[in-house]
Length: 131
Image (cartoon, rainbow, N blue to C red):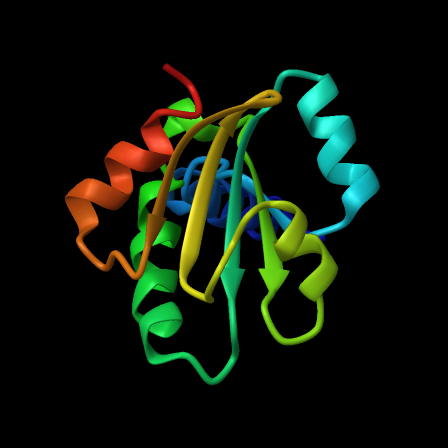
């Protein structure tokens, strides 16, 4: 490789690093054991109970996605809980319908919303996981 190509590749890598967004929260499918482990580790947690067919859930997704980009949520874990296939799990959490968001700071529930598509109140709910 010639020095010019190396320099250009290095410059391209630097531009990508600068343009890349900061680390966001970890997102994963809900799993009872992983959820319990996150609670034991006193991690900030958001449980997102969704259904693929739910228009409110679809409206919530980008709102939650934007809220969890803040640097303060780098340790947050978002558990996606499928309303249609994980009934025992959502029943155990006292959920009654899809589009429910539940915030935890470790094992302590810090807030809950159902059907909320307001960016400000959703951000406040997510914020309770770290404050």
